[in-house]
Image (cartoon, rainbow, N blue to C red; front, side, top):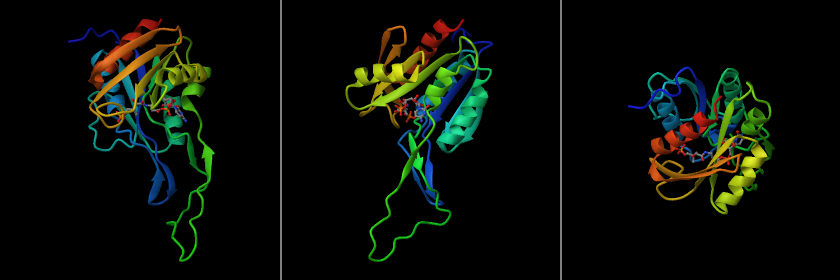
Length: 222
Ligand code: PMT
């Protein structure tokens, strides 16, 4: 049994993948299952934290015991839920895969193919960058903010650049691949710190990575 080292703390975790609707039956989405975010929520609760889990399209995963789950669909909804919960949070961990863009237009009726016509292009507009926003404008002094980055190439270089761009305290860089990241029960990562630190986390259950993230976050809490 773990020390309740997060007792008295409120932490916010985002999990899953946003879906950006095109029409009533279609969306733009991604392959996030929510498992990494749920592992973060379970481990934080086991360490005594009050946990708010903002869950984007994670149907099929059981609500972790004792955790306040806020279901959302789109990036805009995820932003609202995270900003609300972050107002009194000691730490925020953004494990969700958030769509950078959404369709500019939502068709209220199902988009039909028209005989002999080429498909209409899908025009996209930018979604808000929630991690950059909460990092630049901290709801509380000393609030610890952790981002995630799933990368396919130049993993560490891209991670370092992303950490600087987003302005968070820690960035968990995980490489997309077999038996890790999207959909897997397991993961493998390097946690980069704004202080220049690098913590490699070997391949293992998503809970093990989650516990290391909380160790690093707890060390940065006042
Ligand atoms: O859910 P699983 O199947 O368990 O998979 C876990 C995971 C692979 C989804 C997770 O480990 C992970 O890496 N999540 C981040 C995915 C990603 O590629 O994020 P990104 O590089 O698009 O974004 C970087 C960071 O900014 C993330 O913390 C993201 O939550 C945040 N972000 C991104 C875009 C945006 N508009 N707003 C944001 O806040």
